[in-house]
Image (cartoon, rainbow, N blue to C red; front, side):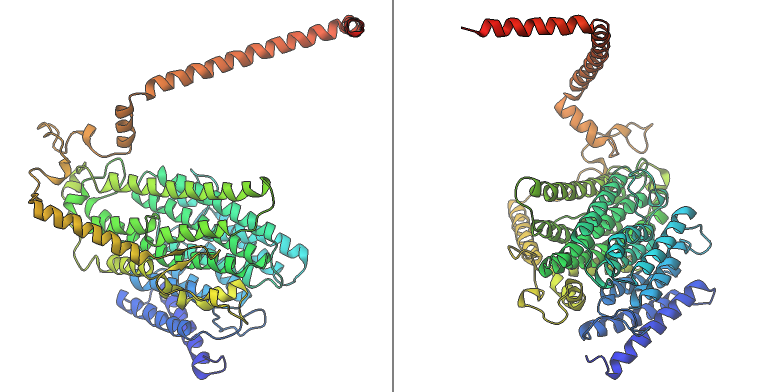
Length: 602
């Protein structure tokens, strides 16, 4: 599409008017129903898809048209419009985030980002985080905007600091694993909008808008901060007390990985490695699209499950696999996409992250290999923490017996209530199996992030059915892996049918083979139920070696403290004796040296 065509001028204006109407409807008490809100988000999605199918050439910087929607806006805008269409929520933060990422004007973008930081979480609710964190976020956005006004070297060296603070305020990230706004408040659609807006702000301010590339060292610092935030989010998800806060920790972990990918894009632009920058940006786009839709499905289905079974505290929930099979199935499938289980979208993002790290330039020697190995180990640890947190959530909520009267009386969600989560899961599944379609829609943004606006090489074209590694040494085909898994499952099912194995269960599903509980335990024996300590107790019972090991460790620590205490006493005594008899020690040393020299003569 040519930039001066009529459609190219009308669509951005129409898109801005629709998003402004959605923001007005969310901020006021106008009688706007859920269907009208979804119709508005659907119109915005259609306009964004039209702009993505026919991208305009060029990029937007200072002095561009206010209503201009450039190629960099489209991936983030499409994800947010999908969030609004699927959730149908009357959330001012979601509309404000969509209107913010849609503009290519830096000043208007930063005004919208500052407004998103201080907006309340819900109508009539409290602030999104602590007032101090909101103030820091607004100040960081303003400082980042001021630093963008010039291309001096000192401005570019200072710019990553306020950008990281602003992005962390938008995404609710915290380097402390057991504190921060996201540990206190459960997840909501606002957090998903903040995740997308924070990633867009980091890409805009560190890659797109600076007059000169930001240094590779600063990109490495951004990646390191993102990895620390991801580790903190994974730890928070693993120790969260309820299902909504587990989801909050998972979102924080994915947000940290998003900042890691932005840092890799900065490194690729600074070192003139366009394929590295392109691969990292594609991983970021796939994270926001595939993983973001899966997290939205988890959020919606958890809300319906909590309405039917009560609060989903992990110490008290359980037995929903038999009581709510449809909702539990949707929850498990959505969590499989969101935790990085292969070959789905989360695993594809991690695959691209690993190959982007392997494609980084390295210095000679061992020192050049230490930093990439540490980052690779951190990414693996984040993936493990997310999988363990997901396993803990599924084991405590879905498996076992119902442990509360309200959970025992829960009724499965209706088909109408599961339409939105199933639609989100369908989009996430489509992006998992056919990532090339999503990357083709966002191809112009990837080229702009990699600096390939004027000339696009053949290696920068996205494949339709797979994902190409940034270093060019591998291709990942998720659809082929799924077909192989389906073929293996079909063969196992056919063999079971031919062998005549019965598929019936003689006991209730939640008993899991345990003996019947006594009459005074109507909800089952607590010792045989799935809970937070079940896996630890089973491993302890199987190995039967943790108690002696703890005793050995305890005695070793006591011996170490004893040695340290007596070593300090002996050192102080030796120092006091040396100070008291210093002259005698000097004379003795001279005499010994003289005797040694005389002894060595022939």
